[in-house]
Image (cartoon, rainbow, N blue to C red; front, top):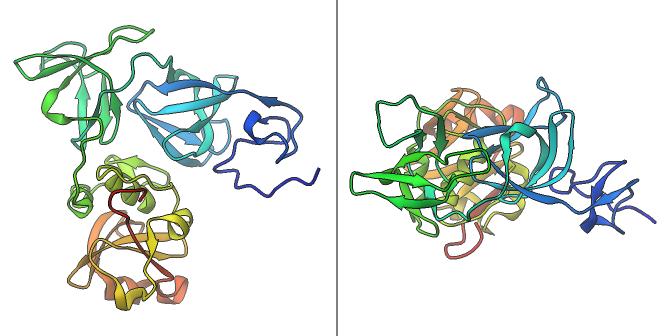
Length: 294
């Protein structure tokens, strides 16, 4: 068999183990049927290798469903069902699937409490787009989450949630809420995120699913704008090798970047002057597809 050259970021295969769905496409000593789990902590680092000092490839958020292919030595080899990303996460971050989600966090972040009392010490911090299963909404503004195998589901402030399927159509307004958030390679929350995560999360709030990394977005996000920069409009995604940014009008872009080490809005001309020699000019312009995949 001649194995396909599949992107290991999006396909669960190694020389010794692979997902059963890849049988016949890749070579591996063993093929397994994955089991489903959910992320049971506010955020969990998805590593490229199963050790703490390994580079972070992405990040998983509370409530996200993952396919688990292996558990070994305190680590789990998983694939995120949100965007297909593959990597290693600490096994203690996973919980049994439990009740199906009913809502998502719409606030940038919201504390999870052990009871309906803001004076209690928070149990965790949940982030925008995180999926939760609400089983009770009280008149005093609190929502109770479904219990898990590990115990009480906890309590969230109802105004920080939105029903599953509800969207915020203006993704630039969502992206601007992240202004000042620190830059973090592989991060996917307002406590730290990278350029492609800002695009992914902002579009997710608008109901648009896009892939995780900048090179993937440059190839698959929405539709290509054939006229390039001459035809670009506010809301489009500008793509360079290894970087993406929203065009926001007024000759400005909005992006998470390593120069500011934060999410920032700046003149496109300033970014070009700073980076032209290293990465060149815009290689692609992508227009998110309203009403469909990003």
